[in-house]
Image (cartoon, rainbow, N blue to C red):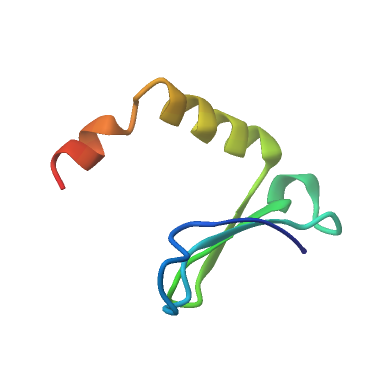
Length: 66
């Protein structure tokens, strides 16, 4: 897998990370791990949709209530 990003990185707690798995099927190529050892897999199209939603503020309400 190819490491793309670590979300946090300010501690040694196993921060969430984003990877690309070139050997995976197209619908499972993106891998996101969490700090509990779990992972999700999605397609590049799904990741692009998520990034677009973040850019347009769709998730801002989630953070506003936190």
